[in-house]
Image 1 (tube, one colour):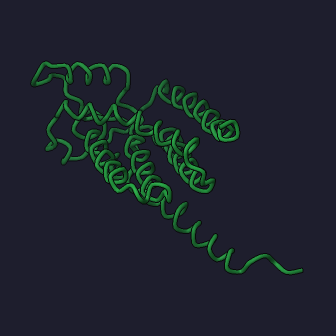
Image 2 (image 1 turned 120 degrees about the vertical axis):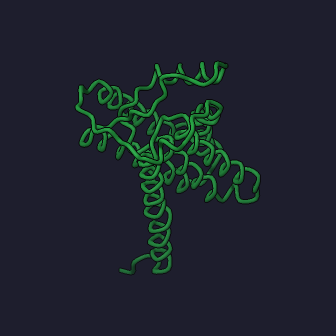
Image 3 (image 1 turned 45 degrees about the horizontal axis):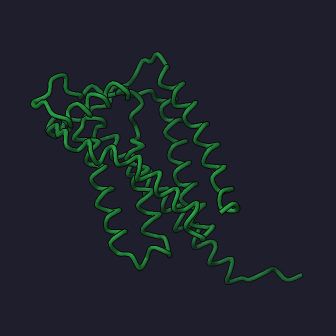
Length: 218
């Protein structure tokens, strides 16, 4: 466990870096480019999606903890860590170069219940700026690909199926809660698929070729 705990250090260091940069970006005065799509207006607001939206935090944290402490495969550990770090770094760069925001949040709610109260709390704590690409979407897809590719989890079809369902609900929640627009979601999925191909597919092929060649002879 002590040896595995060393895997936690890169996560903590990058987490601190990311939060400092994110907080600084949130204080930028703008101007912001407003992200919009006509299809967003056709998606109804549904407060019940706040549940999978908040489950995202436990989903990401739980998966990272699993790959740090309970999965022995070092290569799989670095795959998910690099994948998450790559997407979050890309998000910071895009937010700095192309400051963006949304204007699709409802000002009035059709119902008054505990879920609406949770949405109001979310709106107060999270601004509608720096939304492209959606980190909720990118990280969810990245975590699903890590779980679905994990050798240790291959026998557990229910775990992989549950991961897919939760990922889908989280992606949908960003739109039904009006936290993200369709372009945010589309770019988040596109970037995550691209990073999956680079990290999992291309790297796997290069590693396989290197093993086939064997050690260089002197």
